[in-house]
Amino acid sequence: MPPRVTEPIRLALIDDYDIVLGGLAHMLDDYRDRVVIIEIDTNKPLIEDVDIALYDSFAQGEADTGQIDLLVNSPRARRVVVYTWSFHPELITSARRRGVDGYLSKTLPAAELVDALEAVHAGKVVISDPPPLVHSDPGLDWPGRLDGLTDRESEILALITQGRSNADIASLTYLSPNTIKSYIRSLYRKIDVTSRTKAVLWGIAHGFRPDHHRLDAWRDGDGTTVTTDPASKTSD
Image (cartoon, rainbow, N blue to C red; front, side, top):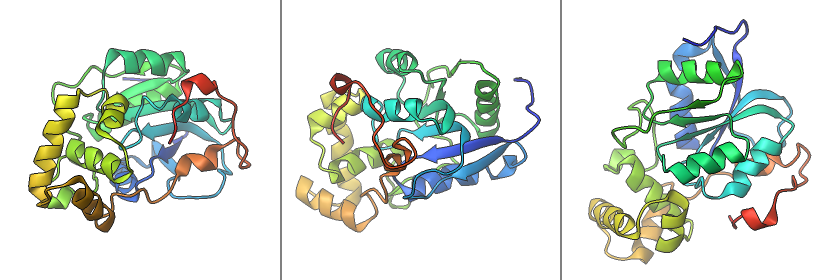
């Protein structure tokens, strides 16, 4: 058990999908004495500093290192934690090299997630064990869950709806092209479409376009861009 902090951790949740953040916030409801969510839904620069920025990787892609650089370099967050189900060794190594303080699995039960956040807040680097199963904690939410899509299928459809190619999706998620194709076939059956164009239209109609671009509010706190290594940044 990490040492219990005297004040609740001030937490910012970072993802562009309201439903994803809402599920995560709801999962943490029972731990309000230990975690206070300061930022969840804003298009304005963050005014209050936070102890931890929790970067939910849903449909954002950890391989898009410019986004992680932006958080790590922001003066508004003391520490940055990636919240993910992707545990490819290169992703973990890259995140640590860029200054991330935690790399936590989305399969963690809420109590273990809060324990891990408290350990990070206390100055420890916390890397979850690679999960034996790929599915998120049942308290979380994502677009299309009520339509039968798994968390991973939902992420793939969100990236398709954003206009990403299969090659882009494979690069961002560190999944093989054949795995991407398998997910696409499965989600097409579930939403009853037969083409990428129809899948995009279905996605647009069912909440698969980002609600915001929350990282824009982290650009040095005043709308200016934090300088990062251009060679390491991919386009949004």
